[in-house]
Image (cartoon, rainbow, N blue to C red; front, side, top):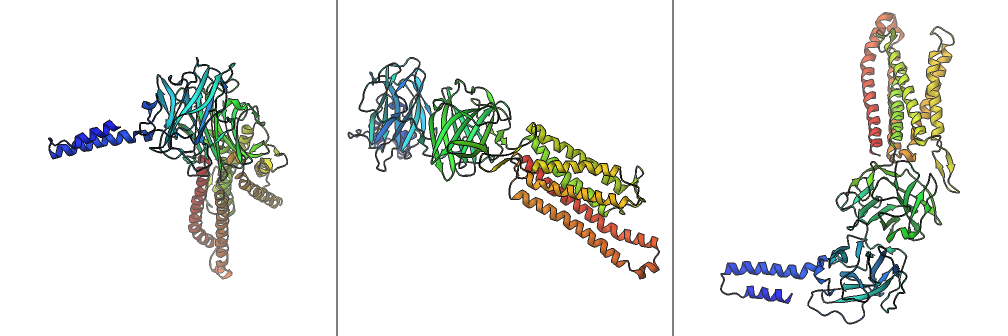
Length: 619
């Protein structure tokens, strides 16, 4: 650096060049000087790998460092991982801005670095090539204040008998410590050499210093988010999963986040059905977070595996939002191979005293299978299976549009087309009958879809001593609606002729069964709370209430219009106008109003239905 500064001065004091050339070269040289001095703030300190000394032109501090280096194991085997942590040791508000971490042969500390590192937080640290091995050193990415960093060291295939971790820590430009001696770890079956520099070891997860971010989704890491496009750094309601493969291609780092008081989890599955899945959970355990792996066989509680399956574990629990990070080897015995493709499940729920309960809502399931170690993708998912979406669309179409329109025509439009017939029947009757037959067909189709999806009856059960779980009353009301939908056409086929004295009985039964079916079909309100088709609240109840008020208002308007016409047809008018003239007069007046009301009614019904279909499609 001193040579650079002298170089700058030489350029500045050259009197032979013209003023313009002198200014040009002075600015260029000064830019070079600034780059040389400030370049280390980005952690690109590969030139310091040998002696591990910052090229700041100052002496390192002689007093003991206020930092400690710890590991999670004291022995290792070839290819095994060890988590190395650097953190502030004193209780004072201390911090550091930069660091350089290496692992060396404990018997030859001047030899090149051995093994290589795996990053646990790419936002705070980066890999360096110290010697001939890429990733054999770790340094900072920015000169921001830090109190703790972590990295995972992987032993080489032919490691030395003992390995010691060395760290250089920079507090400020003039304040730094070089080669802070960390723990010595020994090759398994060997006795670890005593050293005064060994810090207390820890096997518990560490605390995350920063929140997760969606920056890099689809570019440097794969992400699955709900709602779509949310950022866990700014949105406390964001459910977030990201994963990225390390540069050596041997492990994957997962980041999981979500607002829950119990647990948040994700699973790798070969299909979109729960069962025989590889599960990973982050559970709130009385103020701390337990990170574990498990396996689910069927719809049962996960069988938790040993914690050694995961490493580099860290967590954060703030304002009811759980965030956890961990690493997992790509190839692991009794676990799914991460080089293969899977559907991703993202779920959350309650826990009590370490016991995991069923998730409250349908898990978010990725729309496609994803190779975990494949290229980064910004994945999309849905909490509602396609069959259940069709179930909702069919039922809403039947009872919001078809049935309400058919009932309106039968009630108010019998005399609207007095001279128009289709296949020998009056037009209103053919419209009413066709719509009702279509309603029965679509209701039957919608009725079978949940059975296909659930592979049987959806049982209503109790979740231990807690709240009721399952489908609730929805399937029972649905069965009643289906039964009434079938009874209606049977009654219509067996109806007596219009002149029969029993016709009045048919009319009341037909009217009663139809009205009961429409009322019970309002189980759509209850269906809106089903976890398999979770419509947004309070939006969906409000829109459904608006639709009910809409059809009641149209029906009331037509009734008032009909009463007004009957009142205008006084006895005096009937004396002066023949019955035929009266019918033509009334028909002309009615046609104008009823035609407009019918068109507006159909447009309104279509608008309400379209709003729900669009919402269901986005789930």
